[in-house]
Length: 534
Image (cartoon, rainbow, N blue to C red; front, side):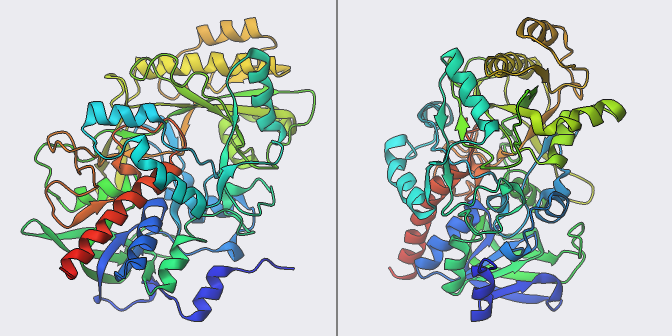
């Protein structure tokens, strides 16, 4: 029996959902609030603002795909649901970036891991970046609210063998490990979270907050790129948009105008600062687009005698923070240990190798396990992150220089992951490096890691977490927005997404976005209603 599609049911009830490519040239929309982006920040904001009685228009550059469209097909999903067809990368090609672009944003395609913002991170923001009102105690009720709203709880099902390698290795070595909370209800444990959930178990914005907003009368325009903010006398008076073409590769469709009392930018790291740059937004202290962070991810591949079949089952259910804070908050790069899903296409890119060698590695996919280290960038003086720039056509691009501080983190992460995988019973382990080979024991692996080159394109790096670029803080000399998410120079503009963060989170960021945005959007709703009804 087919799984019901709540979004299609809502459309049948008359939700106002519009494909920009089918609209008239020059069409004008008006609302109390314009929200650019429909991911964790945009979806959370939309629900809160509409429930407060405010009219909302949401703009989404990606297309509308629902559970009826999700077929556990990597090629189809990467092309349709990800930024730049899942080929987004930093300017020099050093880091591949997986980032969603569809209704629901990255929440539609992420792997469901949901952590509260670590307390050391929040304390660092207050001490080093003049962030106020967002300490652990103040945020606790917002975390609780969003955890209840989105079904976030530790995964109660036994981990799949890929995650169990991480657990077993940590236990053998006496390292910390814990079960990961996931935002799911009635999960079928399929393992293809990254291609969109066909069973509506993942509590993404597509299934939760956006339907509530649409039921309350919000308008959603998808397939529309927000090209420019119209700025007059220190205020944003409108957003100029343009419809995307059929492949979402170019904005050459109808031009649209949206006018509103307040504008919320929630396009995520890279896209939100990109829109502000295109709009020539005030930036007197040249902070816009700076300090963009990625949790750069290094990996190791292990082969086992027994089957792992890491493409089945919840992609992430075990993690380790053993190396996250041990060098201090501002010391050498700390990192969180996790595992990724192991679908064939994404693994082919990560395994590396060419010809017969690459074929041999993929031939062992069913018996392979991958560990990943999410490196906590942005806390050390030598970890300044990247800068969002604009290409000639106005699309955003992240320049993220790689330096010795990062390479030191990569080397330590390789050693930690290799030791863990051998402790879990691996027959061979290989670093994610262009010149790596399979090591048959821990001493050989350790020696190999010591001999490898640490340079651009040699080390295989990826990221699924883009943060910063419109960093918050109450000192406008160092921040784009204040601690409420309000732009320092534009009085009716808020940034409510992961681009707010002054550093990386040190954990998968979706719950941080949900809770912090829920807090800030609720304050915004109160302010706007008090202005309307003094």
